[in-house]
Length: 111
Image 1 (cartoon, rainbow, N blue to C red):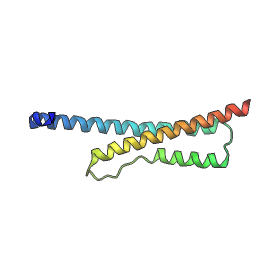
Image 2: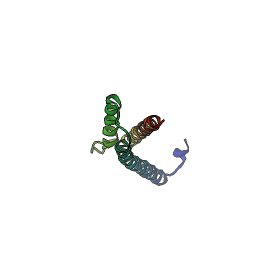
Image 3: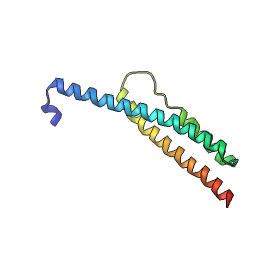
Image 4: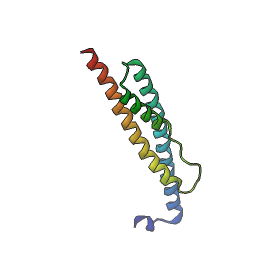
């Protein structure tokens, strides 16, 4: 209701600012996905051989991390960026979980 009290010009400025913030957060989440993929690849190379199931899971997580592009159509761009950001955050969470597993396997192997 407070947006109804704002003049049209102020409302459009706020909407533009909202869109800019959403777009920026989406772009940062894409960069974090790329960085997570690089770190996960290096960790896998540095640590012991993984079993076949874990190797398959790693490949899947890496594929998802690197597949962050949105369709080029401008329709509902803000909604797609918001959903893309949430998807990227989930992918980063999965990458961190895999990184934890990879590192634990190496620690357990040393014991």
